[in-house]
Image 1 (spheres, helix red, strand yellow):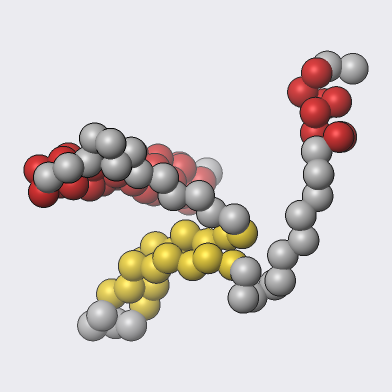
Image 2: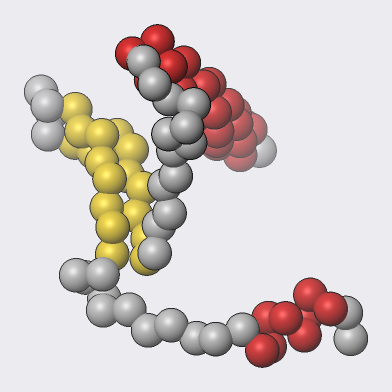
Length: 87
């Protein structure tokens, strides 16, 4: 048995309320009233290294970095869906 499996077996369990404990972040198209992106889950941890985010330029750099991450994720999903439709 590997160490990773042992750690997961011994890991404490947490119970969440179905709705009130769930965090939800949405991007919505205001004209259509449709959700474009939704991030949701229990115990979401969003951490910012505030030791290095000190100016508006730092904020913009962090936002630009997140934009690049989401661009890659969305494009990968889009390409995957297009490939599935071709099959």
